[in-house]
Amino acid sequence: MQWSPLARSECRTVLTSKGAWILAVLIVLKGFSPTYTGWGAVGQNITIGYIQIGVSLFLPIGVLLLTYQSLISERTSGSIKFLLALPITRAQLLFGKVAGRFAAIGASILAAILALSGIGLIEHGGFSVLQFVETVLATLLLIGVFVVLGILVSTVTQRTVTATALAFAYFLTDLFWDSIVMKLYTAVAGVPVDPYNAPASGPLFLALRLTPGGAYNVLTNWILGVGNSAELLTTVYIKLKPGTGINAFVVEAAFESGAVPWYLHPALSLAILLAWLVVPLVLARRLFTRGDIL
Image: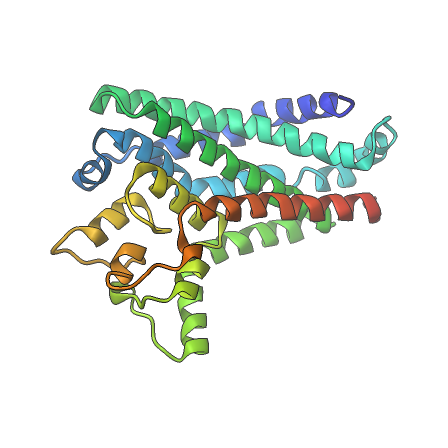
């Protein structure tokens, strides 16, 4: 494969940087959070739950920061002219960038997952291998999504400051997505949204899971058998536990007496993640191969 030397170079660049390993350490520190709530939700599979908890905050912004300069730095240094002179197409160059960054970041995150798994194995004993593998695959898909988004940002911007602003704008949007959706729903439907007693609205719950992080939580909650929600597994467990209440959007709690719309099936969260992977990649390829990238 003609793009493989470039991919290996990108992979080495990321693996030898501090950023990828700082991200891995942060995921371990964030993920390892043994609680009675987590144990009550999934028992010994709380070790797998540590993965979901660990990647929830730091992975999106971490991966974006490790990828958003991949092409901008080449333009700034002038090395983009050297890369374009190589006997590969622009599409192959872009794919080499994506593959290399994904391999490196994926390796560092897998190291974090193995560390969490080792800690969990010592603390809690064995866990479901099948659910562990499925959760790891879902996490790798999420990494791929943010690698592609970072490459897209690097493709459409000419300056580092602009790319940085876009990366943090996305992070803040994702962080406050629930609030944004609630305000939009209230404005459109004219009905205030109370997360403590959420309305049984299919469009509302669909909107809440349209972000990569929301779709990932829905998918991993489904894998772990916790519930149908874009919230973290511990929050879902508290929401569904009899006699307790919490501000959270959980399908089983909102649709107690009615049929759940088909498009809220957790399996469709996989389609949402795949869309986040494919659409930005196609857009980045189109812009990179047809636009002026110098």
